[in-house]
Length: 372
Image 1: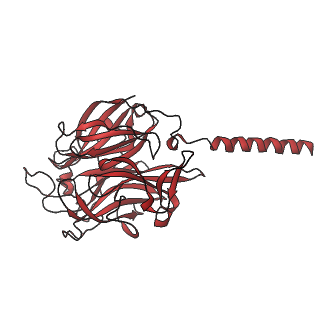
Image 2 (image 1 turned 120 degrees about the vertical axis):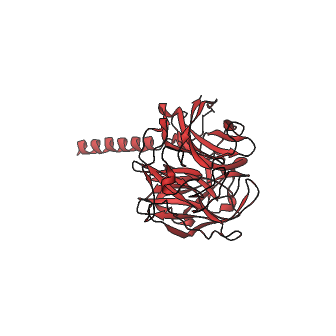
Image 3 (image 1 turned 45 degrees about the vertical axis):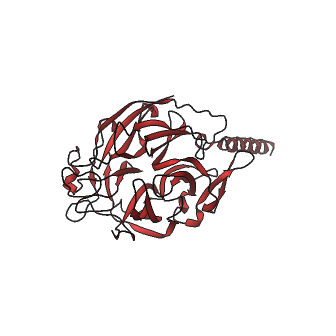
């Protein structure tokens, strides 16, 4: 009996030690003791186009002559590239969106694991005649629903979830009005999508364009963090999260509402309580965890300046000052700089990202090296 008691006590000590180990702060979610380490970027290079007739993928064979965006989500060994307004025919000298055979959104996919020489698309989600099909149909009526633009997606619970905004009207450059933001779900590898209409955020709020990333939850399992901006390119970033199993339940989303006296985040069920974590003019943002810096990275378009990159110590910050990644003078008409945690090299020192160019209205692949 004494042996059994001793063994039980030892087992309890091991269990408690294990629990204490699990309770150590996750570096992704802990800003204490950290300092900013990102000094700048170098060796920024355009590798080449992903879309268009001139790209190695020859996407005109899918009736994708011009398109933009190109946010990415991973599922298994496949990465999906999600594009915005897509056109099948355009005049050779046309600049910006426009043309015939308009689809509000299309998707390409790849298993290309080597980003250094560009992205080879394995194919696109197509219709019965082999052209890239519109996944989320829109009314295409100005001042009603002009288009449905995907902002970002994530694989969760064995399905794909695509977050999108219903655009009411395109206004002056960098400004547009949204009806709402919502989510669509696919359980057949992106071939078909179901609109989750019960999962909506109002068009005048701060949760219209999102960038999601999965992290470990304190009590086990995983949570998905979303960095969010309003419609247009002139708002700041707010933060929300949801437990992965509850991603389809609007009431399960929680909004960052500041820090308590100990520096711990406060999460509210009320989106109106959300605090701004990055106060800037932010367009088409992207956020990932970078293993080289062991910090969060955020990229976005800063109107009038170009694409910038910022370093975050925790999802809610603090966030460092913006550093130029690609300037407007280097690439006129640039926007939508999207990263993906899968596409790095040298332990995360080299990052790859998509970038849309208004002329020739297609998506390009870029590379940069981080300096710390």
